[in-house]
Image (cartoon, rainbow over all chains, first blue to last red; front, side, top):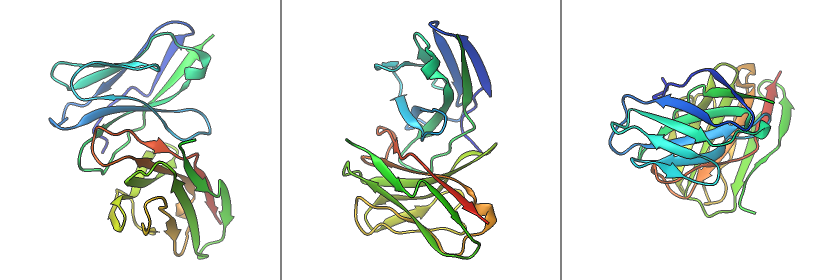
Length: 109
Length: 114
């Protein structure tokens, strides 16, 4: 079973911020939180990852709860090209990675 | 350009005819992995390799073989394909094992077994 839980789908308006939640209540102290997205007809694409502190890069921000049992991927200004399935996964030394079903993000023009 | 290359992109084959899907990366990554993606089931890991000559089973290894004789290549072998192996396959790599490293994925191989 997936170690993370995400909503099946979300909608957002173009040019507005999007907050994609992920629950990982059984996270261990050495698990990193990774986010990937999959555009239609493409392979998954790395977005961002973090351990404890919030992280920013050119694509997104990752906000990690203080107890690390949840995290939120933030797209600051959604565009139509951000419509994709977003996966939140946990990665540790044990590389049996489990991808859940992800969140399908719809962007409304 | 840093990338993971899979071949072929599309393949239709018949039950029982051995096939190999190739995966190659040009980033000197130690870790490589194969996934299959099916509607409603998400991405499931088939096999992974932490370095040359080191491979291990993922969640759905039955019916598949892999080898890692050199760092850049990680072929997926179906000795006797069956229709339930019809799926979209992705190869991925990362610099090393461990949570600090992100994956790079290939563009996928759509396999149909009739």
